[in-house]
Image 1 (cartoon, rainbow, N blue to C red):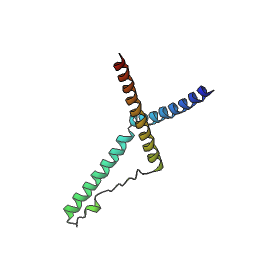
Image 2: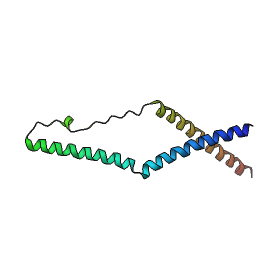
Image 3: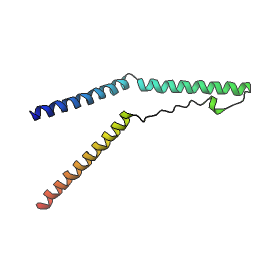
Image 4: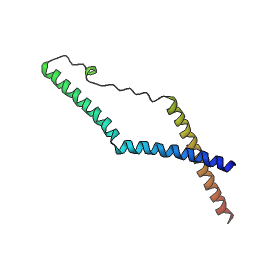
Length: 111
């Protein structure tokens, strides 16, 4: 009974990870990130053109008129949870590797 429950949990976790992989993979394949970067470069080119035309016409120049500030806040519940999860996984993996090498070291010393 316990084994079936753990298998269900592992299947759910694997399914979520696989779905996440597919989402990231297809966004990469379809060029979503390249499109977002292209939009930023177009915006930058538009700002450069505006700056050049303002300089040519002799207008007063203020850097704040041409710089697009994008302050993205990545501090949300999901990022905090995934950060804690990542830290936990890192600790478990580190402890597992250390214990594995200790075990192997003890096997070698006994011979």
